[in-house]
Amino acid sequence: MLSTGLPQGAVPKLERPGPLRDRVYEALLELITTRALQPGQHLVESELAGHLGVSRQPVREALQRLNTEGWVDLRPAQGAFVHEPTEEEADQLLTVRTLLEAEAARLAAAHADSAGIAVLESLCAEGEKAVAADDVDAAVALNARFHAKIMELAGNAVLAELAAQVDRRVRWYYTPVARQRGQQSWTEHRGMIAAITERDEQRATELMREHTEHTRRSYHARQQS
Image (cartoon, rainbow, N blue to C red; front, top):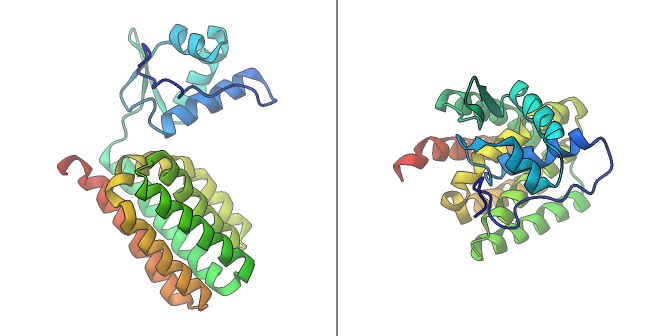
């Protein structure tokens, strides 16, 4: 482990084009979202700068932006810390997620074509392999891709924009329960694919609502398991 608690190999490379402060911001946000940087963890500017191979200035700017967006808490005389979401914060966001994704599932059942359904089938197969291999990071990423594909198949740009605003936090909350949800989550995904394939809008809506509700309950129950 590195001094900031980052697993070896967890630090992303800043090779994409764009302003350095934006690339540092994206790198830190990814580390927080995947919980390589844990809620409550102290974020030391100099150490993060060293890991990312940059000066402290873009790190400082990124931390200020993350603070504005609610990912990082800046405490006087103490420094920066990864935000620790309250149960109420998580509940509110996951409830909104249910509303958005249930509508996306309904629209996907109305509009999805065979090519789109084939992509869902492929993602589901990959997700099941990740669960079997106990590859939590891959399972979380594939889960996000699966839900994003349903959102794409829905064909509603405004709905997709709203979903994108909560996607990162959904991943943040899903990561600690991904292993617990395991194969059951992907079994539920297969049920949704069947409903979408059959163009059963009501069934697709119900299954997505149940699916996201299971994740919400799992998040709240995580500390008791």
